[in-house]
Length: 191
Image 1 (cartoon, rainbow, N blue to C red):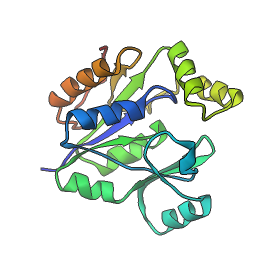
Image 2 (image 1 turned 120 degrees about the horizontal axis):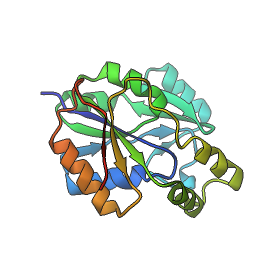
Image 3 (image 1 turned 180 degrees about the horizontal axis):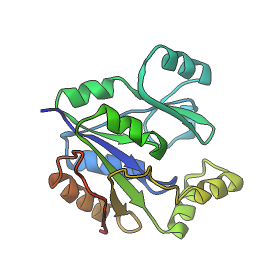
Image 4 (image 1 turned 90 degrees about the horizontal axis):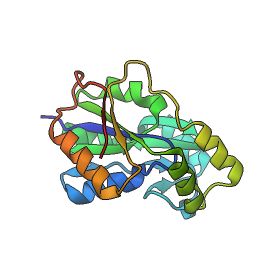
């Protein structure tokens, strides 16, 4: 059986990377996709492969990515190796843009989406604390926090305003109860 492609989406500062790392630590059968991003690795955040914009565009032209997109002034790519992991039966957690969810859904039979949410004040505090964006960029990111999901996209809403361990437990419970197939319904789960 193929693995599940588990897209983790949500606004900047919601804690996608922390949640994904916590899930992988709690369940070693989960694989974390490592994104390629056209930003310097010195800016911190998630573990990613930082490349120049020129190198990114060449890799994209060469077919190195199963999915790619542009957001917040950077280019993001999901390596082709993720499809191989899923084909080999591994469940893969992928930090994904909501804009490319329909493309991802078309690629994977066992596809599900975890939409993380957090209170506006918590998002603002987290963005400020990570010290990667200036005040104007934080304001732009907060304005996009309620960006709509693609119409009809099945997803599970998880509130990540509270303790990380609680969020991870809630998601693990959800993942244990779903095959992540096309019949997944939109639901809200609060830790």
